[in-house]
Image 1 (cartoon, rainbow, N blue to C red):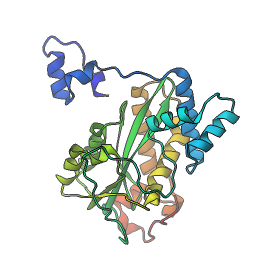
Image 2 (tube, one colour):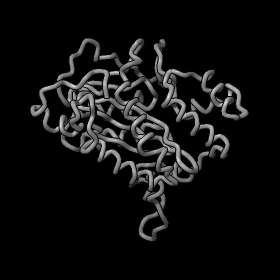
Image 3 (cartoon, rainbow, N blue to C red):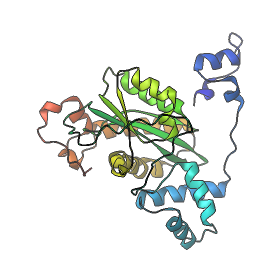
Image 4 (cartoon, one colour):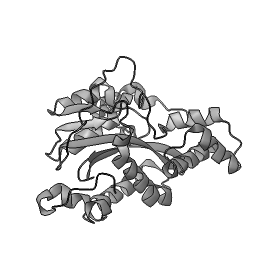
Length: 284
């Protein structure tokens, strides 16, 4: 997203603009290979199928695609699912794989009773299909109130846009005691860990048997895609940025939640003492 802001300027060279924007000169000139139109259609179908059937793996998704008339084998489905960052929800020995050499932090939420806002924030990444391509969306959510405290879009899965989401969240002047994520390489890299710990926040990472811990943010992904992304079919990053900004604002401040006794996330996050009921742990 930042490279789109760099343009020809007599006062500043492109290299100096890259330095000011915090990206490398080589990143500005790099253009990743795009998936062809058929693969983009398959990725869109896989994303919608995953939202409807979170527990389906590559074998079942391949069968569903074949039933729809797509000539596709499991090997191709596996590759596209990896590119999208999609995994079936089920107990397994590890979650998203960290990069080699990245430190894994212990899980801090076991037997922890969460009774108010800013005790735990969680973060996750999802794939966003568009009319001609795709983006990645990261969101940071207050666990107790379901309030989205920060989010960011990117055309690549890297730590930079995750850090941008985190820094945007704590720029409000509030921060959690614990920041919980999966073990994906974006969240285990030194830059992201430093951003969290420099704010005085403890790092927690999902471990073995903790597959349910992302259930709240998985429901967020389902809501944003079914209520906005699939309906709007955004054509470019700018329109997606503007549309998602509207959706998240309405989600936080206007959308009633059954699990919150039909309050909004903003109601609980900003006025927790006004609501006696604790959010239901399994509802939405």
